[in-house]
Length: 292
Length: 131
Image (tube, rainbow over all chains, first blue to last red; front, top):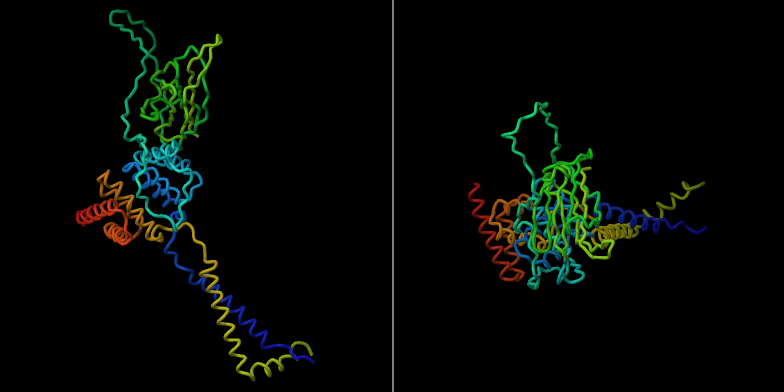
C-alpha cells in the first residue's frame, strides 16, 4: 500500500498558511504607508481647496496652461463642470472672491484659446510648467469694471401738490418676497425670442422663488469676452418684480448667473431672426431662474 | 479504520524526520514572503479620500508654489497661511521652507524659487506676529 504523503501535504499547508499570514500583515495589520499619493486620490473637500488655490494662482499669473495641467491632476472628468459647480457652492456660502476666480478660470478654459488639445499629466512626468504660453488672458470677473446699469425707460411721476387728493382708502402695503440665501437657483428656461417689437439683442431675465413668486432685488451678473456688468430684478415692476433685462452685444457670447448662486446660462449670442417680410433683425433670449 | 488509522503513519514519517520540518518551515517562510510581496508590491491596498499630507513632495511643493503665486498678488499672509494649513500640524513657515528646499534641490526655475522665498519670508513674519 502506498503511503500517504503527509510531509508533502504539510509543506503545502505551510506554504498556504504563510501566504495567508503575509497577506493579512500586508493588507490589514500593516498596509503600505502611503506617502506618495497624487491629488486625484484626495478627499473631495481637499480637492475643492486645491481647485480654489489653482484658481487663485491663475488669477495672479494668467498662466492658463499651468492651471489646466494642475486641474487635470485632480482627475475630474469634466474640468469646467467641476469648477462651475464649486463656484456655485462657494457663492451659496458667500465666498464670492473665490467663486469669481473659479468662474474666471472655467470661462478661460471654456474659451481654451491656444491650449493643447489634451494634457494628461502623470506622477512620473509631471513637472511644474516653466514655459510661458503666449495666451491673451481673459480678464476675470473680479477684475472687470462692474457698472451699475439702470433701465433707460422714463418713469412718469405725478406731482399732486396742487391737486385735490381724493378721499380714498390708504392702500395696504403688499408683501414683496425678497431673495433669501438657500439652495442655488436653477436655470429652468432659456428660450430664444424673435419679436421685432422688442429692442435688438434684448436679454430678459425672470427670477422666481420656490413658490413661483417673482423675486425683486436679485443681483444678476453678466459677463462677456471683454467685460461684465451687474443688474437687478425689480427695476421694471410693471413687467414683474422678478424681471430684469439687458441689451446684449451683437456677435458676442454672454454668460449670466445670479450672484446668490445659480446655474450659469452660457453661449448667449443674440440670434438672427427674420421679420415676416424677410428682413433680418437681432432676437433675444428669455432666461428663467427658479429656486428649487 | 478511517483517517485515524493513518495518523500513526503521519507521526512516523514526519516527526521522526526533522529535515522535513525544515522543509515545512521553509515553505511557511516562503508563503509569508510571497504574501508580503503580493500585498505590498504587486497589489497593495488602494487608498482614496486621502489627506494632503500624503501627497508626494513634488505635488506638495507645487501646491505651495500656487499659494506663493496667489500671495504675490493678494499680499495677504493670513490667507496664505490658511491655504498652507491644509497640510496639517506643521507651521505654515515650515511647510513653505520645505517646499523651498525641495524646489532648490530639484532645480525649479529661479522665478519659482523667488516666489517661494517670498512666501517663506512672509510666513515667518506672520508667525512672529501671531505668537
